[in-house]
Amino acid sequence: MASLIEDLITTLEEEKQCYNRLLTIGETKTEFIIKGDISSLNELTKEEQQMASRVLRIDKKREEIINDIAIVTNKNPDELTINNLAVLLAKQEKEHTQLSSLKEDIKDVVENLQIINDRNKILLKESLDYIDFTMNAIQSESSMTNSNYEAQGNIYNSQDGRRFFDAKQ
Image (cartoon, helix red, strand yellow):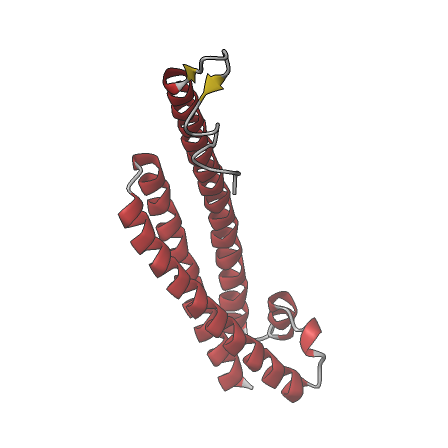
């Protein structure tokens, strides 16, 4: 079982590194959103997607290790959380400490990542709302200046009042 615990610790450390990288990417995305640097934002989003795929692979590996530990300990894999494993390893101080520390570190990084992602979501929404407002203002201005009256007093407008964008996405 010792090798399984070592594998789990290694996997959790790798997962923590990925989440830290995602956190850095999120912070950089905030800067690019504020600057309006779309091309850099696109490149960073590609890297973010690759990192998210890597996290999914690592997570699957972690689940496999947990299932193997469950078989060895004759426990239900759904009940083998990091906390429960740390309790099982209370007599093995090094592994107990490593698991507890990794759990807290990953939890903190994921919470910070959620905060940054929420902030980026708000910034993007505000940017899109501003673009929509600007486009509508341009369209309104264009409609007013391009309207002509026909002989019968009806307004002649070659654009038929169409907007550049039909609906918000």
